[in-house]
Amino acid sequence: RDIQRVFTFYDWILRSYKILQREEATSDLGHAPDTYAAKHPMLNDNLDPEKMKQRALLVALGLVYYMRLDSNYRQKFTNKLDEESYSVKFLTAFTQEMDFYTNELWLPTGIAKTEALKENLFATIICTVTKTPLIIVGAPGSSKTLSFNLTISNLKGPESKEKLFRYTEAFKSLDPHYYQCSRRTTSTEIETIFQHAINRQRSHDSFSMPIRCVVFLDEAGLPEESHESLKALHYHLDQQEVAFVAITNHILDAAKTNRAVSLFRPTATEKDLRTLAEGCLFANPESQTKTKDMKNDIKTIVKFCTAYCAVMRSEKFERFYGLRDFIHFINFIRRKHRPVGGITPQLVLQSLERNFNGVATGFKEICSVFLRQVEAKLDNLEQRSVIDALRSSLKDKSFNHEPGNVSSSHNETPNEVRYKLVIDPSEDGSIVQLLFMFGILKHENTRIYMCSDFLGDGQLQKINTIAAIRHSAVAGHTIIMNQTDDIHESFYDLFNQNFRRIDDPETGPRYFTNIAIGAHLKPSRVDQNFQCIVVVKESEIINTPAPFLNRFEKYCISHQSLLSLVIDNLPLCLQDIVRVTYEKVKTFYALFDAGSFYG
Image (cartoon, rainbow, N blue to C red):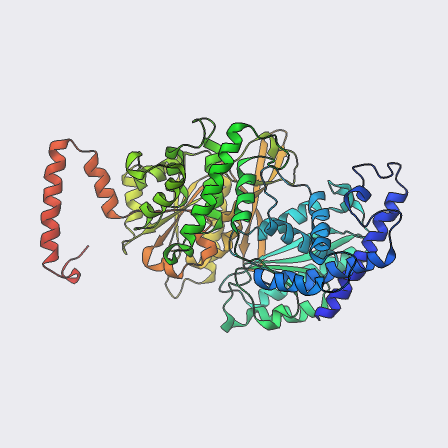
């Protein structure tokens, strides 16, 4: 199967060279700097056919074999190929080909071209146009979903923004069919989404339309193996009637990986983090003229990359936090650092309170690691309570209305402020009511949604809850999702917050996302004022999937933290009385076991 895929890619790459050569030959621009011949070393009039074949073969081998390896084996693979007497080094040929395509893509402002994003984009483009199944494996935040959405936005056939992708002989317009996997995914749902895509592809083919249907499976690693729900993929991956892309956080079983190209994203290096951070902080770090302040900011950002790597080496943090938390940490600094006079220690602390919170113990340890990079100590800064940090986040401006994000009706507009995950150390769910008592939320604009555990309340009750949440997103409510883990997977795209933006000249920008109801993904409008708070018990965090955790700002709110907030707002004389009383009660409580008390 792998050998056949090498020949498939080899044939397509050779054909693409000839198509672009032909277009260059008929162009009046010759070899001007903006022509493809000037951008790609293979596209010139004196091209040696043998060198063309060698380059095409090396790129095809890279797509099939190189991208599935980890960093160590990638180096060994490169060394082995370089022992052969090819006219060009393997990594040079592969990187040049990848850069050629990724540089031709239209990307929204603020998206960094990391190695992860470029590899994801390159593989997605080549695999979709050749109908070769692709499985992208990587940690949360490694640009898997983003790369697919960007590919869909760029490959529009004759309507494509960039000239390269208007050549329909090589590139088809992509028609995506999304499916959000969950732990309860069934083989029937998988079969349904494929049948929809196949029927639509046959309809396109009957009219000779240059359109390629592609099935996209999000979080393909979530379905439980005992259900064998993904076994339905085997037939369709063999038949290849439509293109297929799946993304997952861990490697799938051999029966599936053998039927597809695998792209394995190793853990991000500090170099990748630096590229990512600079891309988040500056609109175009590669071409921008760097002022003295920008150079200082870059030096600080590089130190933060080192700090993040140090934090993630700790076992207690590596699963709870991820790359998305670091990206939003940098994004918060970008949004706030100019008005307050650069990257200050206080600004760093505020960003940490928003994006690396949620751990009952360990937050001060994280702060010390990051603040050490700006030569500051936590004791010398003004630290907010968890409640104040949450209240500030709920008031923060959510949607990005910068002019650079209005350029297209197909623009992916990322929400600047993530939704909230409230971790409840109590087991009685009382935190929800306390959020209202402390004025963090208001009853008139807040809706609470829960899923029932009663035997008689099954799929219909879940569908009704999903529909109600979808309505709240349109209406712009603030919602609390409590005990809703059975339906969380339906809202992964909503929680991801990469909304599709359509500019209406009468009503202004409108934002859309996909919400999954079984095998069906329904486009849904999201109001700019919509806010979501998911409540999860602390005892359940260990079983909560990492991709879910990484999508939220996290806040651990305990009765202890709320009591401390109340005491701090009392007159000094009353504070002493309450604290003494509290210590007396703790002493009394220690005389008995927890089962002796109620409530």
